Image (cartoon, rainbow, N blue to C red; front, side):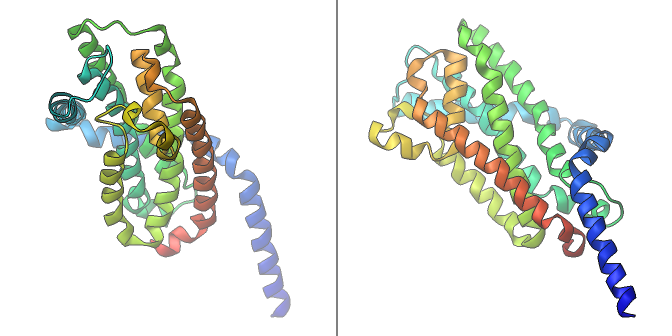
Length: 280
């Protein structure tokens, strides 16, 4: 009996080591599942819905109008030589991507609980696919931004070629935060009520409706502890070419926080992954 128990434990250890060793290879092996989940979510979001596709345009557009009226017309905050609607919409692009990805990832494991208890696959695929889905909304909104540039006869500068770097930055921030919050939400179900508050509060403290250049210089680095500040500044600089939008110390800090977020997100997700089936 003792020998049998020892052998079972030994086999369990070997299996665990094998899973750890092959986990990252399994992410590639299960790539078709990743694309399937992403495509399924896209179909669910847009198929046979009138507002689904339009909402990805209406939401940032209405938010842009409200912020333009409040900060541009009433508060008279500066925008340089850039039309204020373009200043706001260039910030809405990364913010909408992050906020929606963060919210979707938080519920991704709970929403796919039936899969977690039946078959083996790297669970990272689920929150990662929910982040990928929001790229569709991002590119739709980017087309709207191009239309606004034509309307205001605004010619983007050469710096717009750097925009993919800042998109990669917001993508990795969303992925790292998504991994972490998805794992937390499995263990603490009431966390789903906290996520909307985090998103709403984050929008208030991020420079979406105004330029971060209005922040006092001595507080600007502290303000950049919010990683989305560096992302938004980077997007605005890339799209408008306005040098006042970029704050290099804050930008480097944002990239550093991005690295920390993705590492902590992966570490915590992997730590909790074996308990998902029991907690669901």
